Every structure is written in structure tokens, then in C-alpha cells.
Image (cartoon, rainbow, N blue to C red; front, top):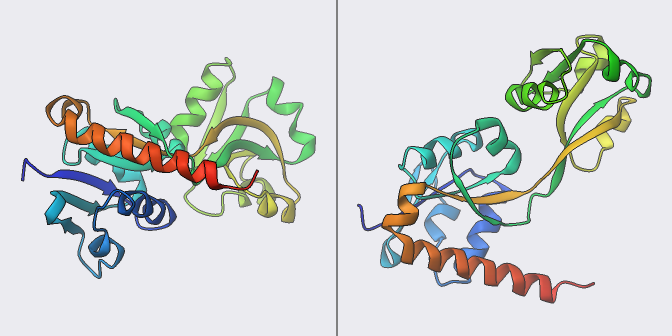
Length: 218
């Protein structure tokens, strides 16, 4: 199906927001909105194919050309470190990637070797290596906030939205690493071989985002 544009998405809020943008362009997203157990869905009239994958796998599918486009959080992109074109900041799913811990840890992470609990080992390594700071990375995949609470780590590196979970466990943001939001990414070869149709999608989604911004209350 070389004539199809394939879009990789993970179920959830980012996919739902993306469907809204695409539907405004006349693309039928009824199948991917109600996939059942199917993982490959279509809008055959517009030659669009959707594949539903895990968030961390979106960069992999796009990088290998199995998908032409993908929607994924900036945090996942940074962790994957794959050579993709980030063609549009979609703006939704906005949060921050932060270092958090007890307030008393502020001094220690400036001077000593310390332990970092995180689901982002590559980001953590790159962030502190750039500062010349030695760290021990403890990779976790859930309830990262437990690290400092039970003494497994000194700090955590994780996504922060409202900060309520941190506050509930006596933790605070110590450093902000970067802002995070959903990104539309493109395979480098696809952007050349399917440029016209892909550019149409990019331009259309960008117009829809601008229209949303214009309509939103100031």
C-alpha cells in the first residue's frame, strides 16, 4: 500500500486530539476511534492507514518507514533519540520534564554523585553528562515518585503535570529539564517521496491549531 499515508498513534488523549484535527480536514477516523482488537485501521477513501502502537514504539515505526507520520510526546522522542523530522508542535498534552525530590536535596545534586530514579535513562544520562555530573540511574516504569520516598533514589526525573502527586509525597520540583507536548513527526524518506500529500496534512493540521487558538478565550 505504497500509495497510502500511514500514521502511527498510541491510544489515548494524543490520538483523540489528533483524530479531531484530521476529521476537520475531511478524514474519516471512525475506524481508529473504535478499533476493537484491530491494530491497523483505514480511511480508504482518502488513502490513510492508521496503526495503533505503544507510545514508546511510535518513533521506531516512523524511523523504519513502516509509518510515514506519527504523533508522540516530546519526552518519548528525546528518549528514543531517532533521526526523525519534527514537523509540527501540536501543543496538546503539554507538561514538563523535571527533576524532583525533597527540598533538602537541592545542594546534593549540585555537588555529589547521586541516584536518579526514572523511566527516561537516556535523557537522564545526557542531561547530567552535559553538566559533567556523575549519577547512578535506577530505571523504573511506574510510581517513580516512590524512589526518594523509600530511599531507592535521591531524586527522580519524570513528567510533571499538576504536581499534585509530588506534593502528596512531600516532593518538589528541583530543576526543569524541558517542556513537553505532542509532536507530529515524519519519516525522512517519506517527506521526499510523499511530500505533496504529507505537506497537505501538515498545513491542514497547522491551520486547525491556529483556528483553535483564535477561538480560545484569552
